Amino acid sequence: MPTTTTRFTHEQAPCGQAVDGERFRDWDDECVLSDELFYDCGCRSISHEYHDGSVSRSVVRHDGKVLEDELIGEQ
Image 1 (cartoon, rainbow, N blue to C red):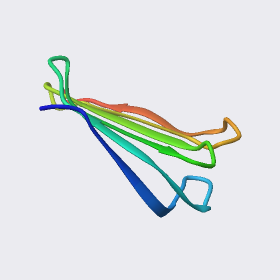
Image 2: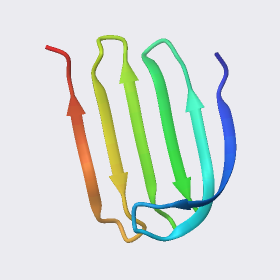
Image 3: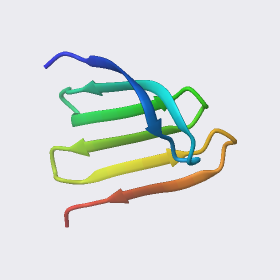
């Protein structure tokens, strides 16, 4: 499936502000799904779902503080 880009408005960013931003979704051979949200304030949220069922997730506030950075794997 192709990459999709969607503009969103007035969504709550990780910092708590309601801002606009963009969402990128992509499917490829290495990762079943990439879902990336970039907020206009500078916050970002990125998750990847892999073929083995594992999921990585990273949430970073606009000031650089990492709020979440984890890999949940299927064992």
